[in-house]
Every structure is written in C-alpha cells, then in structure tokens.
Image (cartoon, rainbow, N blue to C red; front, side):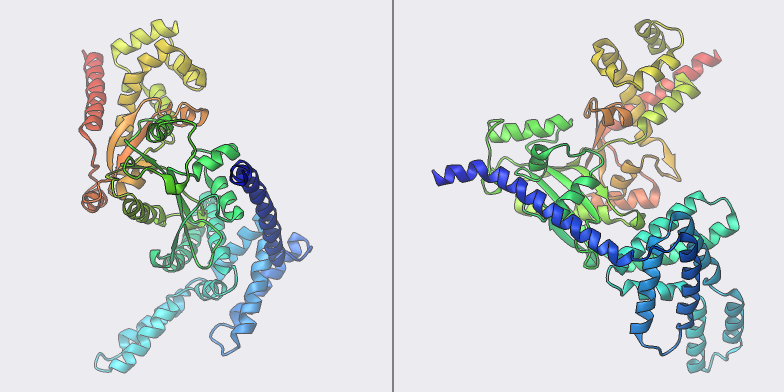
Length: 511
C-alpha cells in the first residue's frame, strides 16, 4: 500500500522539489549578480571611472606589486563593466583595443635589436626573442589573464567576448574593426586554451539533476522547446539521454548540450522517435525506470538536438567533441546500438527557397510543374502565391498541394544541402557542423517536423546525418581538406535531379 502511494505521489514530490530548487537557484543567481552590481552611479560617471581604473591597473603591469592588490582592482573593474550599459561597454572595448594593443614602435625597435644581435651570442639572442615576444603581446592579454584568475572571471571573459563579437558585427570603420578583431583574437586564443576538451566535464542530466541546471538546459533548447512538466519528464526520462559539457570555472553552466533518443530504427520524423519508444515498450502507457530499459531492443541512438549555449565560445568545436563522447558512452551502455544518426533541422532553407523562387522560378520548378502549380493555386503568378502559401502553415492541410510540393521541395533541399557552398563548405551551418564531424548526409525526410517552427525553418523537412564511427575521421579530413561532402546515393540522386531540372529549363529558354 505504501509503495503504491509512493509511486502515485512521486511525480508531485519531484515537481515540488524542482520548483523549490529553482527558487533557491534564482535567489543564488541574484546574489551573485549583486556581487558585481553594487553601485547606483550614473552611466556617464561609471564610464569615466572605468577608463581611469584601466589606466590605474595597467600601471601595475610589470611591477612587483602583490597579486592581491591587482586582482582586487580587476574585480572592481569587472563590477563596473557589468553595470555599464551597452554604449558604455562598447566605449570601454574600443579604449582597450586602441590604447592597450601592440605598440608597433616598440616592436620595430626590438626587432632591430634582435636582427643586430650576433648569431654566435645565443644567450643574448634568447633575451631579445623573449623581449620581442613580450612586445608582440598586447597589454590587454595580461589583464585578461588576471581576470581569468578571479572567481567567476572566466564566465566574465566569455560574456566579454560576446560583447566583442556584437561590436564587430555592428562596425563599419575598417581600421577600427581591425583593432577590435585583434582584441577578439586575443580573447579567443586564451579561451581556446582554457576550454580545451581535456578540461571539460561530461555530465548526464536527469530529473535528479539540480533544478537550476535543468532550467538552463530547458531554456537553451531552441530547436524543440519544452512546453510542460510532462514533456520535461519524457525528455530526461527512460529511453532518452541528455548530456552536457561543463567547465570547472563555470560548474553550473552547461556549455553545450546534446539530447539523444534511444530507438530500434533511425526515425524519419520527430513523431517516429515516440513511435520507436512505443514499439520497444509494447504499450504507449507503460511506465518504466532506467533500470527497466530493454537493452536488447535498443539498436539506434538519435542525436535530435545539439546546442551551444555560450555566444562567447563561438567558433569552438565543443559540439563535435560532445557527440564523440556521447557516442562512446551510449555504445558502452547499450552494446546492441550500431546505428548512430542525427535527426537535424535545416535552418534558413525556406528563406533560401523563397529567394530562389523570386530570382527565377525555373531554379526550383520544372516547366511542367509550374503549369500544374498554376492550376492548383488558381493563379498565373505562381511565385507570389507560393510565397504567401509557404509563409502560412495551413498549406500542409491541403492534401493535393502538399503532395505535389513534395518532389520539387525535396529536390531543392538536396541541392541546398549538397551543392550550395560558402568558401567551399556546406552553406547550411547545421550541415557544415555534422560534415566537419565526419558524418554522412544520409537521408532527407519529408514532413519530419510539421510544427510551426519546423515549417518556418524548412517547410517541415529534416535530414539524417549518419555517424559511421570507423569512417568519421576519414570523412572529416576529406571534407575539411578537400571540400568533399560524403552523402548517400539517395541524396546525391536528388541533387542530380535538381541539376537536370535546371539544365532542362535553361535549354527550353534558349530554344
């Protein structure tokens, strides 16, 4: 009787614990913020003060002053920067980039001394090499190292790089942009050292995980948002796995997260993930624990959502390493798993599609398809009509229209993923991510995600990238070094059909 009551009240107890821990976490987060934000000084005074503080701190560089004093000054600087508004922050970044960068006059003087040094005098050459290295290192590099030693300092620098990247994206002055880019490069190189994969911790997230981390994982999930408690339980429950990377200097902050579904086949749709679980369980309403998972029936691991959470770590291949770690963890836990694949969105495909239709309808539809489309849409202006139709999710309820659009849209999607390039690599950023990891562009799936988000991004189309572990390294090298996309025959054939369609339309126009 007590066991029955316990099982009935367990979800309620878990929910109460989740809410209680979340409230504690929010209180803690506010407390940490107050450590950085203490002053009610006006933004103008803050800005002047922080520029003066910069001058004071850099006077301590290359002195024998106690680290305690320098670090306290750096901590106060971080506090003032944190409470500054966007405009003031950008002025501070510009001051750093212009006044505390590499001093080229010193570089030239030191380089001349090095060149004048006799090659036989090894000791003197080493001294000049060290001096040259020092003058080639911007002064703000020293400041960043000091900040990195502070409590929450690494997180501050990650956020600082977020501000630097935002400033770079808004800049028009090329000369100033070069200085800010150098600031960005210095920050990036430091963070690359500190966020080396050897320093990262792989953590599995379950409903037993601290609620503040659960909340962050849920908040960072942009591809498939968690809408309610029931969905949250499923996302972190049996036949699902969620892993994150954390860093010792940011212990309660997920850096990158990966949601994985345990299935019996590689599903073509998001709904197929739930259907696979139902087949394994034998009953849609059967509740099991992690210990009761049927390992003999789990043969596929599906990476259906991967997300980097820190904009300041842009350009770091953390997702790449996370997928490899998770693949090893899952194949170890479930020996029968031999199918590893993503079920990935195709962001911006619809925008690209509408752009191509506007440019030239013949790039997407054959002459025959255009005529049929005029009859279905009852208009001569197919481009305008399609633009209106595809920007409204109700088109999927029109069976005739949806059925007719399947072939040209899948064909166009294959072209977009396989043929459209940026600097030799796949134009689509998700495709580029998986291909750099060594995955194979395996299957393009119609109506895989008919939600409003899926339709807005890619007309509901998704793609499977297969991970053949014994071929990933060779595929990755071939893609990165030779720009070769490894794809299945089905994908290649769809891309060829798109190419033939374009050629036929060109011939018809010229004849």
